[in-house]
Image (cartoon, rainbow, N blue to C red; front, side, top):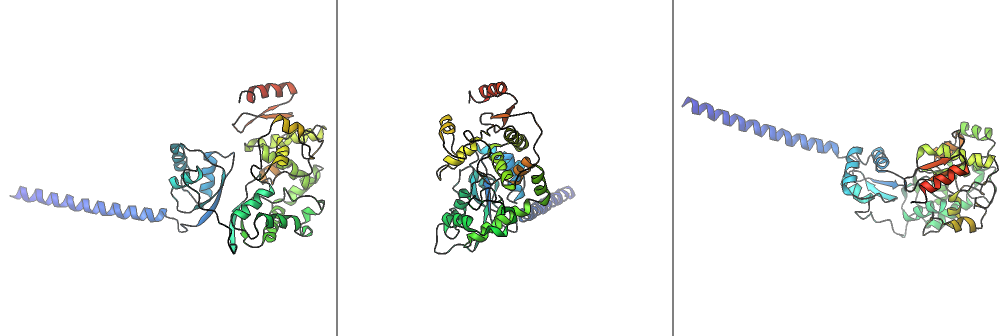
Length: 357
């Protein structure tokens, strides 16, 4: 009888302990879930995926903007999905799951519907301007997000803004475009004042182009406008960050030695349309495009920047690598370039890396 009683007590104790463990587990799970839920859940974040970004770079950017906690988890989910990154600007929200984000930026799930033209513009909105966009692309994004007057109003603001309030524009010819000076960044735009938004971008440029950088510009015998022109070429050519100072050095060396720059992006700038701002080029495009921007046919720098470069590309021009290289060619679709000193080396690189693409 005593033995049966003892066994009963054991069963009751085990059952009670199980209930405690289960309750503790439920509490712990609930607590952890609450911790994992961001306080700003649902907050919209404008997130851009660029043409040359890897899943690792996208993961780091998502983490830096508070959209994910684990870059490894994102990369694992992305690779399991079997999808590919689709360049563009997306409206993501704090608290979205990793699979939801992956589906959104790979096109597996529809994007949030873009704001449609309405009777009144939003009071303000966030806008992300990637490095290497031309002004028209910024204007299109302003319109897509509901800015008053759309792309046309933004372009008019760029053309008519009072330049006298910005010292770095003092030497710019009155008919010169502001291409290159609209600093890429994430901004909070005024919904119905495109002129104020353009002023904000120019002010940001003035703050980021430091006195030390201006001093370096003078030491190189260049103007800020010329630095930005070089930097815009670097921005459109370099897909690997480490290559920027080398590509900058090549363009600077070509100009110094009296060579033509032979920069494909300058021709893309001429031939770009709203359907494709940066079209693929043929040999005929390079030979037959008549424009002061075609650096295959015109000596020296083009009339101005062909895009709005980021800080890294500007720094690459101000502090280029010291190399003997005069040529480079893209290595198929890797984003990397092969560099050469002589025409013979360049021809061999073209045969190896381009002819079989």
